[in-house]
Image (cartoon, rainbow, N blue to C red; front, top):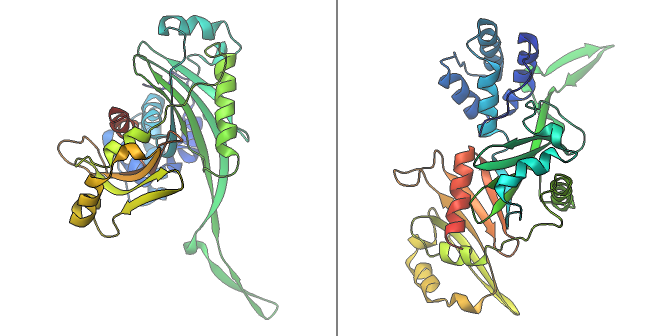
Length: 332
């Protein structure tokens, strides 16, 4: 799903986008963008800036290229995923509902490069197979830049200056509905602390209601059965599993390399447990790169069954995120 076509940016504006958004992504993904378009990479972020700016001036790195890349990597992975029952309106009616709402201007709108101070709905993308709402939240932080440290003598005293570089980031919240799928998903790239998630979910449901898609919050789909079945699946590395019953719980975990399936005593104990006696289940799982899984990088995912929440512990592409989600849904 590509980002909707944007209003054309000047070369100077596009360089600013590269400086603030593209280079806030992990180096691995920036390198993939440059490699894909045969642009010199270099070794450092400073190299990335220089080569990207040159490519923009030469026309070998364009706005559509950057936007397509952002749609694949920005806000995917290193996030929490909640699964819900899909909205009630038929997919064929979705466009007319949105166009009749206060969010009509965001449908097929320009790609957003904003860093808003509060979570803001910045775009709606609709095609024949799916619907996506995207919210952004700007934030900044400071990271050590030891190469810029220095000492200086002033009035007979020696001072040490420790340098920090400001880093501009933006977090993404996304509602994604793939028509025909038995679930839709809300992806939250914010820490699960305090009221951050409940506030983000409330904002999602408010904006979906404004768009005419829902009258009340969607029903959350539990993943307890998915955790139970996945913890006995040899195609995934099961790092730990925890199942709760009234008054207590049973937990099994691998403390060495590999998963509980590699430890005979724990593997046999897991087989002997009657899952039907437990009402909740959580687990930590690992997906490896091999010829069958389709993953482009190793990914760890923690599943909280009763919360219907999947925590993905690595930045990755959209396709890898959906490989994780679809694996657990197939076990539900």
